[in-house]
Length: 219
Image (cartoon, rainbow, N blue to C red; front, side, top):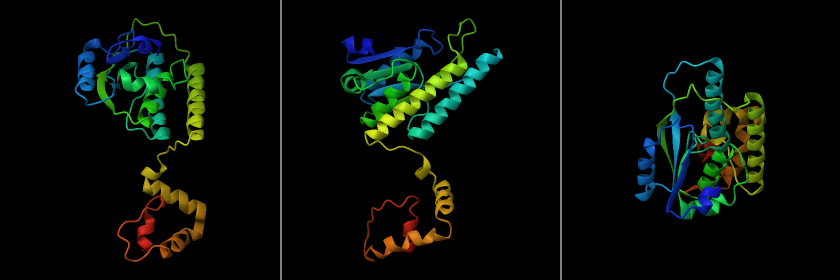
């Protein structure tokens, strides 16, 4: 973060020093921003088949699982927020950067979420991730998972206090309907009728917060 603040170029970014994602993607990322196709470009890792010890295998599964959880909680248009391979249009990311709070690994996720909430155009590009067999890991799996999810929970709470809203529930009508039927029981259908009576029969456009849009069945 400090490097981005001190940089003077129009396009700024960083990659992980272990080079498990090749620097060869940098020109492409920079071109996307330079050609106004994005304000932020982040890598989306894909994993070729590799044969390493159990620890690396577990770390990879945890990383993939954590990515899915973050996407589910925050309903993001990107699939991988954690990749240490990100480039930004400096003038647009600076206001976002100044709002970030985390000083550790969760920062990668925080900067992407805040950029999206700030209205920046965030683009994800596939990058090949090759785990280095010579790398000595500094990761303490269980403690780091706990720290990460604690940071995730605190960050989400802070956003909710600021009025942000997240969640996948409304994106899956079937799941939403099951949840509402479990909540309302036999009165599930009755909850729509009073609202339907308030809408004029000739209305062509209706904007009502009605979850799975089942209200339309009663008009």
